[in-house]
Length: 74
Image (tube, rainbow, N blue to C red; front, side, top):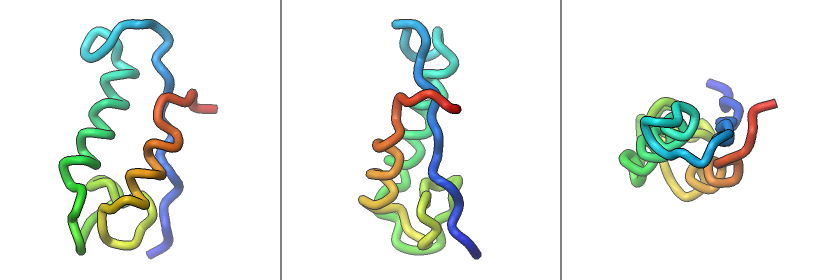
């Protein structure tokens, strides 16, 4: 199974947070899901937060997500 591309997270266009701003809420949910599965050592999927496709959710995945967190999708 090949590695999936890194997540591209859209930047909020307004200063609102959470449910009032759907884009920010989406970004926050993605981060929360990865953090909720952080430390999973095997069987992790992309949806679990395994962004580099190695079957776990670890610092490499968190770094990949934080590296694009808040950026605008092309």
